[in-house]
Length: 418
Image 1 (cartoon, one colour):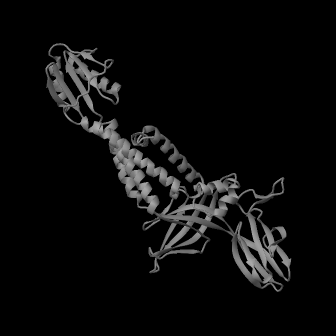
Image 2 (spheres, helix red, strand yellow):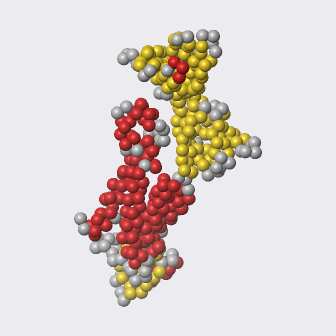
Image 3 (cartoon, helix red, strand yellow):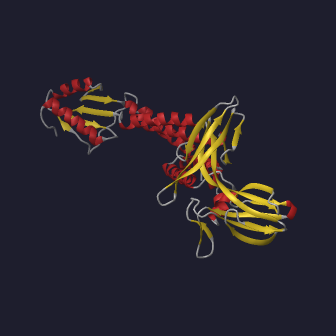
């Protein structure tokens, strides 16, 4: 492939459509799949597809190199397309440019003297009149010729903002249980989770999840806020998004007298190593509304704590000891001590992001709006009057423009024109 052919392909409409579809597909994946979680979550939740998700970086779509390459090529494509069409559009702004009517285009006849009345009416409507040997030409709103280029410019600004935002944005993810505090010392505040709870539908499925937080300042001030999936929280230049939730269960290891030897919170899929006995306690899962499948697998019917149980696996010196289904407070007794899970608490998963791409999106959206107005409202209008015939000429909304001219001629002549 020669350089010219490559450049022609790089700036082609076909490539633009293909890139747009790929970017849209990646964006849909990034919306459907939880983003920014640990590798184990995707492997455990999506089985064989987990490795594909990680390999294709679907776990962090908007900061993946694949998405960035797509955006980069799309920007080049849009810039190239705009450069190709801009010279011809600029040429249409000049007064000497006047398109010829199509052979099958609309044309209306005038009687003697009516062309001058039409000229007066066109001047009142701010048409620019240019005399010719056989009549005159009228033009209006030539600026609309660059509407598509201005629209392209708006898209370029938005995509460029997304590209730069993905390259230089600051983002992260963290979990909190009620009472936990996440400091952001470089911004001069901390975030404390006061409460986290779920909203349920009538069929007990989760409809929404809510985090009630306090924004703490070093001076002791507190600002109470509430966020949920579709309502992020903005503190200074950081945006916080509600992205996930889960259960954290309290593990207790006690001696024969009931004294707590160790206690810690475990999430489903996490383990704790108890050094004195070389025991690994693996919390396979917490099931707030416990049931058993026909294959003997544990599951939860809902996220309501109607029948809470724990699935626990024990290992000693890397050897499997046993698997257990426990009720809250039920113990596994061995070697003079007991293992139990007494309670569980919901935790929230929050994503934070600092992205200066907002200003690009705002500027690009304004440019796109201007381009659409130029293209579909302030589109160029040309009227050719010669040899007793009137020909309306436009590339956009030709039927509507012809109707406007026909109605204007009826008002001038007092009759239907043809």
